[in-house]
Amino acid sequence: MTIQTPPSQEPPAALHAVMPAELPADAYGRRMIGALRDAGAGMTVHALPGPYPQVDPSAILAADIALARLPDGAPVLLDGNALFNLAASLPADERRLRFVALVDRLHWADPALTADEAAVHRNLEQGALSLMRRVVVPDDDTAAAVRALGVQPDRVVRAAADGGGAAALMAVLAAL
Figure (cartoon, rainbow, N blue to C red):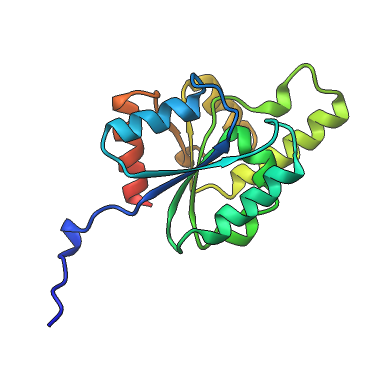
């Protein structure tokens, strides 16, 4: 005899986060993941090697492997600093996995980039963000910048990296 748990009592799917290994402790993605853990969310972090946000072959390979190993339907938080190294992997898995980006700023607008570098970064960020079910941002300025790349307003969620933001993000993830 098999006993099934009623749907309302099923535990939420385990969360997965993909982020650069060398991301500072005060980075938005790290703080949001800490807030989610503090709120009781189960979390597996997949750290990508290499410099961020630069494109790095070792990070691309690690991203491909990490995403391929995740179970179908898994909610996956992608740190915005990792999007450049994830861009090639995302199209293959965007229907299978539930991607949500944590974006504190868009890197293509970095004044240190040349015009050609900025164009490449913009295309990579725009393409990656178009595959997200939701894009979580810390403030209105970042929300406006994300929407300017063509992300629909209903897919952009403002959430501080604190307990309230974690609760809002958990509600978003539950509704995906």
